[in-house]
Amino acid sequence: MIVTIQPSILSGTTHAPASKSSMQRACAAALVRKGISIIHNPGTSNDDKAALAIIKEMGCEWSIENAVLTIDSTNAFIHSTSNIQHSALGINCGESGLSIRMFTPIVALSKNKITINGEGSLLKRPMDFFDEILPQLNVTVHSNQGKLPLLITGPLEPKNIEIDGSLSSQFLTGLLMAYAAAEATDVSIKVIDLKSKPYVDLTLKVMQDFGLHVPENNNYESFTFHQAINSTTNQPISYTVEGDWSGAAFLLVAGAIAGNIVVKGLDVNSTQADKKILEALQDCGAMISIRDNEIEISSPPLGAGAKGFHFNATDCPDLFPPLVALAAYCNGTTVIEGVSRLAHKESNRALTLQEEFAKMGVSIELQGDLMMIKGSLVKAASVHSRHDHRIAMACAIAALKAEGKTIIEEAEAINKSYPDFYEHIKSLGASVSL
Image 1 (cartoon, one colour):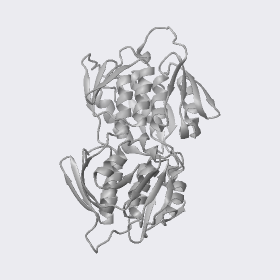
Image 2: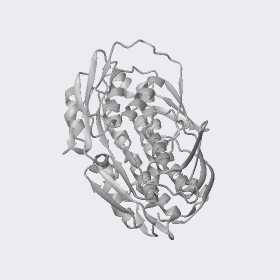
Image 3: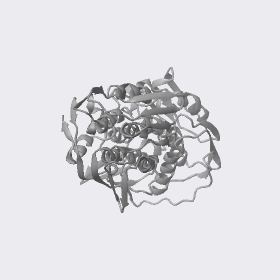
Image 4: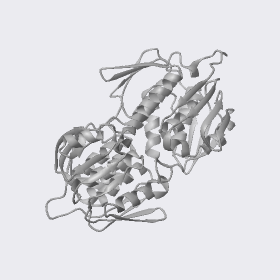
């Protein structure tokens, strides 16, 4: 799909999309928790759909009616005490990095042989973590030279282990949930150089909300499972998926670039790492008003202009794309730390941002772990999403004040996380042609 965006002035109100980080964790927690879970505000992105397909394959029953998702995991295979083997079990994680890293340890609780696969860029991502860690937990793993597909045979047995947390916290999320499901007692997961700590906070919060056994957090250096208090109940639990700060970051930056808008459905007390976008917006001079469940944002007053800023995105690397779009309209040079976190995304985002924004006349320099963006007049151009949802959205919001129309190829990449993105900015006044 090709999308054309003309320079626009935005105004009005929109609602943040459902958080896929929250939604996918909720699906995993519903699988781990035996019984019925009722989930409000469920997400509809491709990653969310992948999570739902996974739990269905693992024996959950679910249905959606009137924007309420009901999941019954009573007969899920990970809860089975039977020795009956179910042949040809397999899960497909689509292009979701969170799903592959989170669900693999969880489904390894099953006694069945399970094939784990994915699509697109996920087929190129390294899966060495599972080759190294799961055998320590009595899980047999066969991979394609450290890549997908994986063939695993459990059941996983919790033990004291040490893992590397520098690549992603998502591996830890899967292990925490798997240990909780296995009723781990007096065992610890030691973590070296953990990144994205706020996402671990989100995992622990979801586990708590679903009544799972939550480990003791020892300053993010280790997580210890003590004797669990038996609080199991047959009563259904209810959970509401948060508004997504990752997707809303693009809306907020759009408001800072091209108008005065209100974004509803965001919790400023959320554990989501990407709420840190507010710091960057304040630092560059955007006008922000935070009210109950809504944020109003507009560009700096006439004549003031936005100024370059310094931002550490090590714990929130998904903010790089909207931050680059914001920096393109700031006076001077913006410096963003955390480039090392971008290599294993849907694309190598550091290089992709550099190359695609160069087409729009924006100079980006990479020095080690630093990215430096020089603010300038953004030019009309034809750009490509590189099949990366966040690149497509970053180019779209940068186009809102460009000198002419911007054409985005493979623009449907947004469906991975925010399928309503173009409709939402269009409702705010953006000139968008699909």
